[in-house]
Amino acid sequence: MRSRLLLLLALAPLALPALAEDSNVRLDAPGLLSKKGPAKAPDVKAAPQAWPRLDPGSALCRSEADLARLAANRARAEGGGPADCKIMRVATAVQVVVRASTGRTQVRLTDQPTTTGWTDVWLPEKAPGAR
Image (cartoon, rainbow, N blue to C red; front, side, top):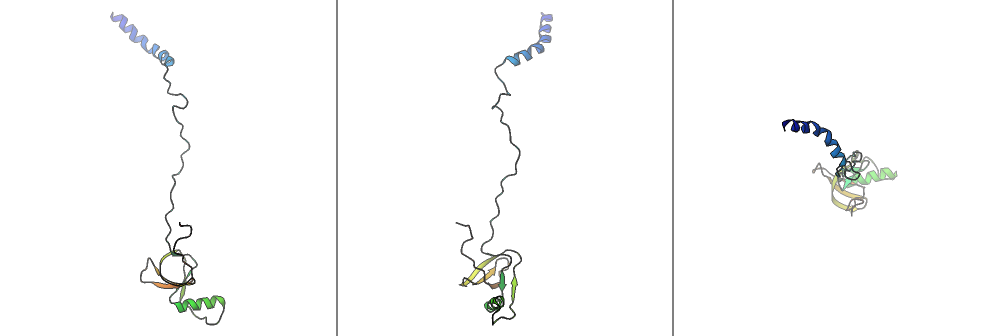
């Protein structure tokens, strides 16, 4: 009895591959395992841009009179002269204080609340492309 049990235990590994091949369960069946595509970077939403803002190249003048002198200088008309204005080098967030007309707006710099000035940039209520 004992020798028969040892013989079965010795032959059992030889019979297992045959049983595994004849089974109905297949783990390599097409469609059972999904293939992963190439890894791609996740979608990153762009940070909302400050609005209203003065874009690079916009003029910011200390007073409304300086803005008028800058306009006269640009048009090479009479009434020009030295204007206390600076040209913005980077996009700068502002708050609209007064809208005198489409070409004369008093603004306050958001990052420097004590700094106000006049600009000839038209600043609509909503950002371009906003709904």
